[in-house]
Image (cartoon, rainbow, N blue to C red):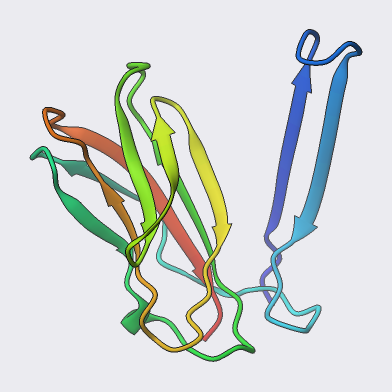
Length: 138
């Protein structure tokens, strides 16, 4: 059984009137169990050479479908240029933009086998690098 732990920490000395320090940790488990997720794509890097290009980073056809399945997707925009970004979407629904250095860690629901996770580069932006991994259950 695999044990994978995800941790996120948010801190700031000037975002609110008081210092902000939040941290949470969770084990990544199969749906409805305490058994760890044990499948992964491995960490991948992709360079999207052309502008206005959409790439699938989690193809729904590749993962078990149904409501009793649990999948997670991590994606990071590797650029350090503040104005560069990729748009993260599930099917045609935009989730948000990842600017240089930003990352997202999201649940991936493949309830009916059709919900691909995608990144899209804007017009005028070329050679965009991202890093991603899908952690999932069979």
